[in-house]
Image 1 (tube, rainbow over the protein chains, first blue to last red):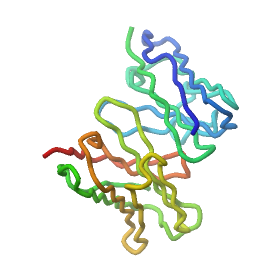
Image 2: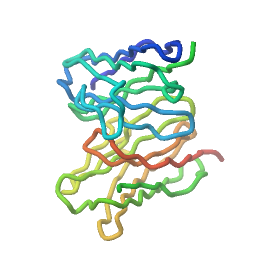
Image 3: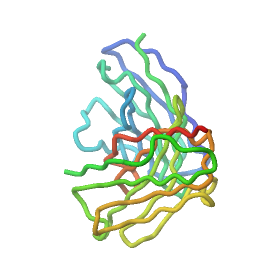
Image 4: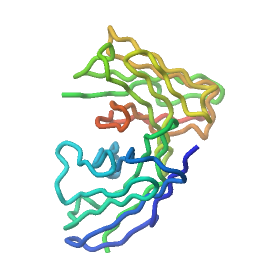
Length: 107
Length: 117
């Protein structure tokens, strides 16, 4: 079973600045990697799939990169709604595995 | 527009069987390519994928929970049903259903299930 490790667990960044979140797979997942944002009390929302493709309605300040085992989500010009928890998910092999999440908080 | 909504009991007793229903609109599970998954999230913890069902009735389960889970679909009602046997307090979580391959591009609002005597 693939293990997905997200880092850091908590990231403190000021509004308007850029945040860089990492996700590492214990074995290659090719580009079958998605990112989700979850605001408190809400369901997750798909941000990025296929490692770098923005989902419908997701602004260009969200970008994903990487392939194989190492992936990055970059959020530029942080807005208030971006302070939330972010999860990566591999879907290259069953079972689907989510990472443990990165909490992005206001500095 | 795709929407999904979970329904079921909010409280179950230990050892009981949980039955959750996902009622969806905007797509059909009799159409090639469509699928629905179940994911749960204990309070304050991470997401955990549980099960998935495809338009062709192909089913996938979390290995750690496979013996306790059953996923089925009723295409005439646009519903997917998840049953989980032998519930335990550690199964207390918000349970979500979601549309997607994966990845999951549309999610229900989730339903909190508490396991307690």
